[in-house]
Amino acid sequence: MFRLSQYLHALKDNDTSKPPVPKRKPGGPVVIWNLIRRCNLTCKHCYATSADRDFPGELSTRQVFEVMGNLKTFGVPVLILSGGEPLMRPDIFDISHRAKDMGFYVGLSSNGTLIDENNIDDIVKVGYNYVGISIDGMRETHDNFRRKQGSFDAALRGVRLCHDAGIKVGLRFTLTQDNKQDLPALLQLMDEEKVDKFYLSHLNYAGRGNKNRRDDLHHRMTREAMDLLFDTCWQDVQSSRRREFVTGNNDADGVYLLLWVRENMPEHAERLEKMLLRWGGNASGVNISNIDNLGNVHPDTMWWDYTIGNVKQRPFSEIWMDTSDPLMAGLKMQSRPVEGRCASCNYRNICGGNTRTRAWQLSGNFWAEDPGCYLDNDEIGIDTDQQRLKLTPWSRRSTKTIASPAC
Image (cartoon, rainbow, N blue to C red):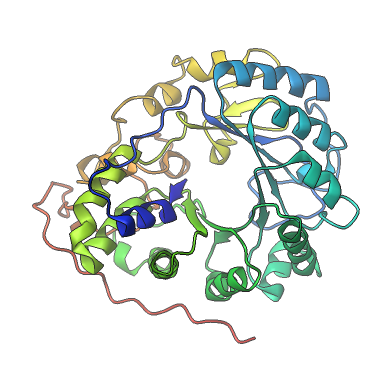
């Protein structure tokens, strides 16, 4: 996860007497836990391919509690309870209360449609540190993605109920070619509804390789969206608003922010680069982990096709530290053994080689170059033969502004 607001606020404060925040090294990783695969929706881009039916083999309440005990002992600081739709687990509040009592930071990741007047008091009593509600666009777009009419209004009701109850609530948006036009309106909605946080998730896109990368429609869309997010966040920072903007699933965002700062406020670029180097980019297999509904452990939520163990058979702590698996061994290396343009990139120490699952899905090679990187060769300092070049001052490509949809 790339915490855009954190970096831009640090630049505005510009307190050079304080060093940039050092890279966090928690005792254990953040655990995103898909407690249930069942969901009341059948969304087009669901990585869990959920459905409204029971899935056999899911962890019982007792098994969940046992795993939580191991996670706490191991030093896991954060549990994000997800699904499917986690509110469809009959014991979700029992699990949530236990997690809070054990001292975890507990987030709830929901589609929002099941948050209503009948359970908002139960949600409040848990004391979730954060509730993230998935939104795929404005009403028509969202309902189309979610394949259910009325799902937008139901999700927005959930947002409002959480906000009115004093719960920190955020919108979670996965950017695609089919909903990019709604991003400006969603940012406006965030403002109107006084939402605390906006999370933009990149689709795990495989692209078409290096040729015509600059003309690739997905890469152009990504750049335009990030430009808009940077501008929006910077306006917030300048007006001393403390809303959060974060992105996920494409660690090139950190490099793109550095290039953006070099162009727009070059006096801050050196300080930002130091902070980004401490961040270090992709944290899959290190500071981010995933447990699915069956107890399978994955390097993160985008690795559901790759399992490194199961908590029914071995403690999570043993699974996570076992580097006999070649993927986990490479992910935990100080400098990952990436290849191609990623190996030659001048900014690999910032992005960490980006999201390895895209390379694996496209080529079968964990360490191949990331086809989802939307930066041009000249921006990352390599030539067409992937040899390093001396970097020159960067000028942002002219981009067409994402049009706001008609309301």
